[in-house]
Image (cartoon, rainbow, N blue to C red; front, top):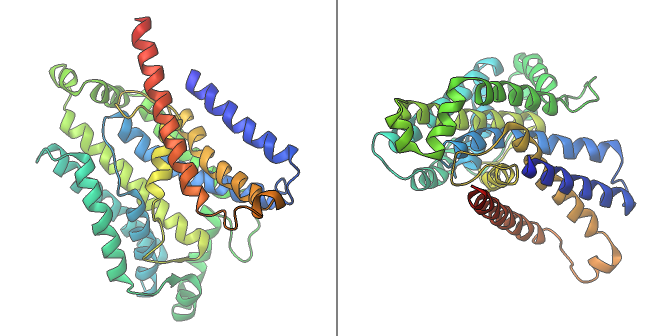
Length: 337
């Protein structure tokens, strides 16, 4: 509860700063909607990696899975595959990636850090092989396969509400993220499987002695994480209307992991909540938006000509501070016992 209160306080502070400073366009609905969409998208990724962290795992390949899924989704439709079938195939690929990760970690006893770090390079390479040197876009698909235009437009309307003839004013990605958060939250907080995941993350050996099939449960969590990352790739393609093999999803695993840590997921495992993940995922998009507006101030722009390099620094420091806070709260909890 203390961690959720801390994240809420941080979010409230940034909102107040954006409003009080009276940045141009900062409080307009178009900017608010963009920030909400970013928060919702990273929220989807954070849900997957957050549950994985709770169970004691980690996934560094999320960004590359997003890129591979976005490019693969576009390439399939460009080849004439129905958008609905392409949607299913991309999600199925995410399931397969999770199964591979889980098998290597549970059966071959490889370290999750090493397995997913290798995946980071492999999946990015596959994305480049699928569409070497050029992006895949909605306009090209509609031109080559006009019969897919209606189905593609429906998917864009359903999941992101950003088609040309959109009638939705509210960010649809927020609704998608909240539905997913509710479903994952029910499993994590209201079922025996969620208790298994907490137990495995807190003490895997003790969980095994208690009769929990730890390998099977860890496999399920890796599948969940990679499947949500694949869904994130589809949402990215539907949102932006294109995907670039080299850059789509690049370093986004850091956003997801940082959001989970800020939301109260301990990197040691066994701790974390769905509300915390949702709130934690909102920190970096809002912080990035605040930094961008600060960069427009004359006093700042005269010193820092380009604010973009500052953003990775802030992300790294935020993750470090979140880790320090996690360690401090853990030690404080141990001392009270």
